[in-house]
Length: 404
Length: 137
Image (tube, rainbow over all chains, first blue to last red; front, side, top):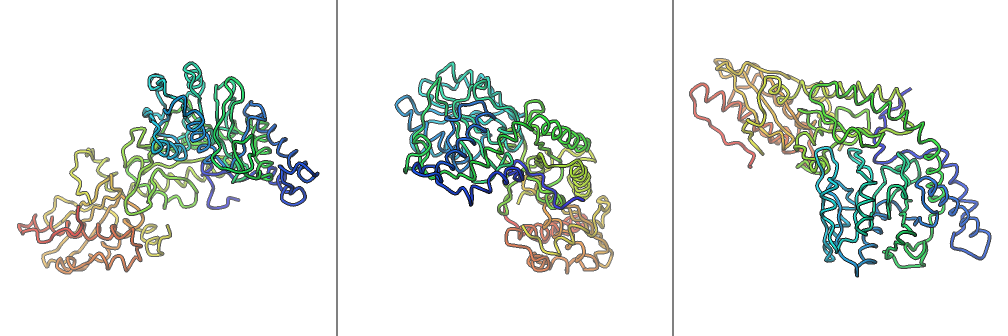
């Protein structure tokens, strides 16, 4: 039996795996101790659980357990990485390189850095969402301290050439930070092989709990430090104060362990469903896949349906929960800045849908989504004067629109 | 955003969707809005010798409120004289469909579409265009 609406917005958040919840529960009640309490068994039990979670997470991303700083989530990790490096390495330089399609937690942090007197280069992406490595290398100056490029994009799923970026960073002695929120747990991430110095990720995008995340901070070759952004008890090697969220951390650890053991089988299943969804929807006339088809995450598909309007489309697909390329907060629609950065026109950006699949998505749900979306697009096109004009061979760009 | 039952009804069962023959002299066509703004409405009226609107059709590219506003407009237009049609005010559409403030522009666009269709009909029949469009650019 299908339960409506069907959840296909797993890039926004994933449901928590029941195995994760089970692992967390004792740490709310029986083992409620503070991991920083060194004088009694309550504290020891909590610390032991946190240490075990560090090992589970370290195994997933191939780092040393000591290199993990627990935070409240990826937004905090992004802030801590960028602001923390900017402060810590102020004597070396003040220049940061990032890209226009980064998450707002990175872009807005970079804007903040600019207000503090830092210099930020925002690399453009091509029409498939990929940065240009030559442009990246050319942007490096003797003042550059950090390259901040995300692993996989949250809207279109494009995976940047991380290893090459890591090599370029190393060659120039610049730190490389990657927001890997959408990638960790979904595709192999190896901070050693990928040459990553700092990396942000979050529990709730990988079937773990909300309110917990981590920042990987390299300890060797080179030894990286970030200036703490909160003052307090000096937890997490002095980089992030605050009593540890023990149940959350236990959940993040368990989620990481399951992602590691189940990644191959999960991915095979998810990719098969994603490809079927895509194949069916792209059979419709004037529908377009957004982002590079090869280098991308396995669980996301972003498709534009030309000549239908995004908000109307969202209303037509109310039995599935997806995201649209248009953020309509007021009378004026704001098309997705990621799709815009990829050079897409406003109207095509408005009419895009992001489908995010998960470990828990079923074939029946995908079947339903396919027919539901096809039906809505067909209906809206029958209603659309633009579709009729297109069918009559009228070039819509040549029409003088009465803009309002 | 929560839509009113009436908006959902018009969106799910739009009235008078279609196309009239715009080459006919008694058919007036209004095409308003722009794709990059997220709304394009095309509204057409067919007028008989007594200045009565005998048929009205629309097609709309836009959100549910835009579709509902134009669908409702075609319902109201049928059977009205051209002069009566000119008197339709966008706030009547807002009230009927219980549009929230952020969607008032949809009703303005529908009123524009009506006036634009009437003007097209007037010009085709050798009359001066009478009215100013309500929306400002």
